[in-house]
Length: 113
Figure 1 (tube, rainbow, N blue to C red):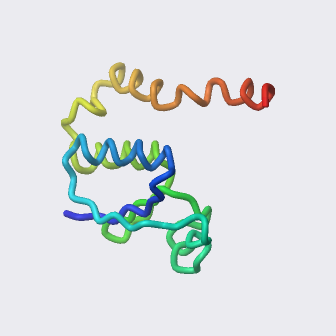
Figure 2 (cartoon, rainbow, N blue to C red):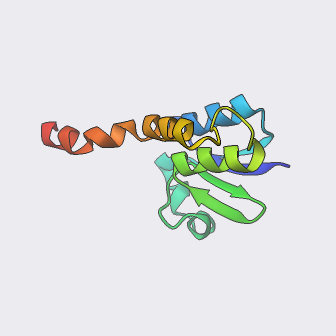
């Protein structure tokens, strides 16, 4: 089954989703969004993602944004037995910790900036 992935090639979160797609060998229909010209603000994109961010995934009418949620969804839906996102709660917790590692330092980064 093919799904749509709205992306911008300069987005780090998009690259994370792209690596997951590639690792799982999924068939994806890439749909570029040019952020510089405001394509993310067009009504048809806002209907999919009111936060107007990339990446945005559309799978059989189901729209999802936020790269981490997309990566978890892809593993759960298309590769539930993959070691990329294991079923074992302790192993999955380690993956989740790595996925969210940068959030630990968010307040410190804001203070420095």
